[in-house]
Image (cartoon, rainbow, N blue to C red; front, side, top):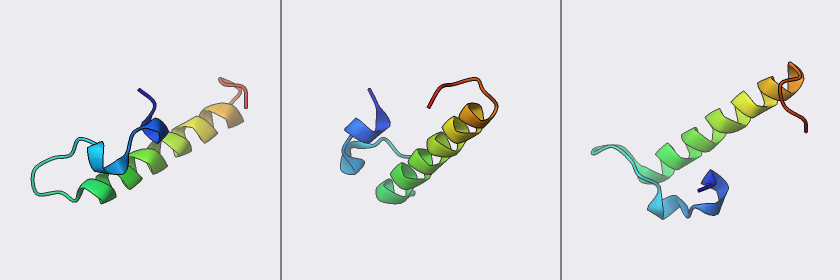
Length: 45
């Protein structure tokens, strides 16, 4: 399942962590990694 297709309230999270913050952080990290892979030529835009 694609992260952007998932509703933030359905995102799995650790006990004691905020579900929406966990979703936003995971999305930001994946976008950062994708951007770096595109810059290095590993992925096409």
